Length: 344
Image 1 (cartoon, one colour):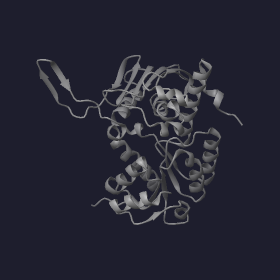
Image 2: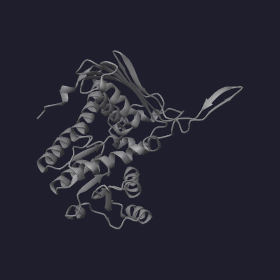
Image 3: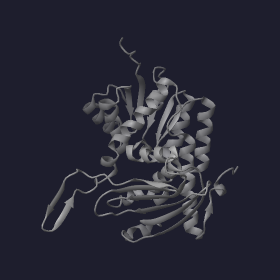
C-alpha cells in the first residue's frame, strides 16, 4: 500500500540578501514539502537575479502584495533586523504563518508587540535559531535530557568567528551579545533551561576598530540557571584556525561533548608529526544542513498543525539575555534576568 502523499505548503520569502538567498536555494532544491510561490526584496534587481537563477516565477518589491494572496500560507522573513517586528505583525494580521530570522527585533517592546499580535491572530511563529538543528548539539541535548549521566552541573559553549564582520554590519547588529552570543544564549536555554543570572566581561583585543562603536571582540559570559546549573560562554571575533564551535555539558555522572567538525577526516603523518583538516571556515558551511532542517520542520509544523521547534518566547529570551549581558558589562555586576521581564 502506497503512503499517502502529503500536500505542499505555499511559502513566500521576504528578503533575498545573504541569508534570504540561502533559504531560497534550499527551498527550491532541497525542501520538497514547500512550494516557493514568491520572493520579495526592496532591491528588485537582486530578487529578480535570484529568481532567474532558481526558477522562481513570482517576484515583488513590496511584501504587502503577497499578504493579500489567499493561497499563500506561510512567510519566511529574512529582511534586515529593523524590519522584522513590523513585518511579523503584518503577516500575522493577514493570517500567514511566520518563520523569522533572529533576532525578532533589537527592542524588547517591539518584540512584545509582535508576539501579542501573533498570539491574537493564532498563527505559528518560528525563530531562526538554526544551531538547535545541529545533529551533534541535538545529541548532547538528548543525552542530558535522558538522565543517563545524571543532572547537569556545568555548561560550556565556545563560539569563535574566523574573522570580524564589516564595520557597516556591526554598526546595526546590536553588538557582540545581540548578534553573535545570541546564538549561545539560545543554545544554553535549549541545553539546560531558563537562566536566572548573567555576568559578562569583555575586551577589544583583536580588532581595534571595535572601540569606535563601543563593541567587544572578546568576551566570557557566566550564567547561573534557575535549577542551579552554572555555565560559561566564550566568544572571539577572530579565530585564525577556522570557525570554532564546541559544546560540553558536564553532569553528576558523566559528560556529553560536541567537538569541532573538520573539512575532511584525513590525518596526515610525517616527520613533523600529524596534521588534520581545519574546521569549516564560516557559519554558512558549518551549519548548512541546519538551515535546511529548520525550514523543513517549520513547513511540517504548518502542514501538520504541530508546534514550532523554536517559539517567539525563545526569540524574546535570547534578546533578554543579550541585554542582561550588556548591562552587566556597563555596570560591572551580575544581572538578574528578571530585571528585564514583566516591565510595563
